[in-house]
Amino acid sequence: MPTIELTRFRVEPERVAELLGSREAMLAEFRADRAGFLGARLVRLPDDEWLDIVTWRSPEDFAASRAKGANLPGIAAFFAAIASLVSAEEGTEPETGDV
Image (cartoon, rainbow, N blue to C red):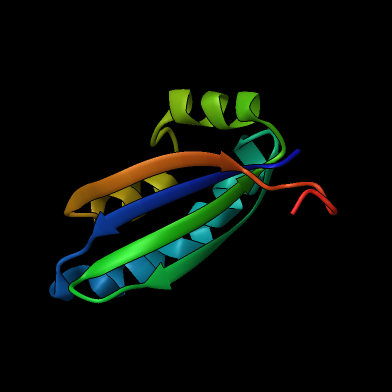
């Protein structure tokens, strides 16, 4: 069952271009360096907040990624544009028919 990472964060308006400009490199480094990374969607919310919805193969893959932190330049550049963390949650995607 896939694990879903929901991270809500704040970005100052003057750093939005930096955040968006670093996104592709960050995703490429996740694909190359993070076992179990399945994909991510970035959602812009009101009041300078953003939601990153990341899908992992398993909770173990997500935990291993967290342990690595901003270990590569593209990942570090994306994280550097973030002013503050609002919330971080982990959940699971239900199997078809579990709803």
